[in-house]
Image (cartoon, rainbow, N blue to C red; front, side, top):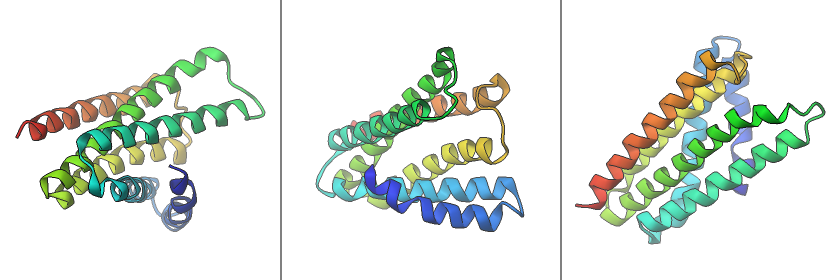
Length: 174
């Protein structure tokens, strides 16, 4: 998790500075792709000698660490939002933690089954899609607390989490 904070910002900034003047959508998709490759790659490295349970635990640590950093950032901002507005970001963090758990388990399953690259690709593409949506909200300066903004993104996250969970259940039972 800490390595992500060091590695991910530079390529993400380069992509944003190169593509944002051209297209907000292109910058968002590229930023999502950077996040997917960096974060899933960092989760995959220690899982080489593990399986789905270790991947799930690693993903839980990743997701909870990310949630803690987001919460900390909310409290140190000069104009703290009202407490009720923590409900929507809290729900997003729960979905994000679930997402990190299932992608970690997908990576562990890939290593355990000897099919790492397809599983890595699934995790990266899923991560890139979610982070592209989040990047678009930020780069387009949309209000993440508006229902027309957060409902599609969070519904998509929940559906993707469910699909990845079903993929895991099927793959685990082989």
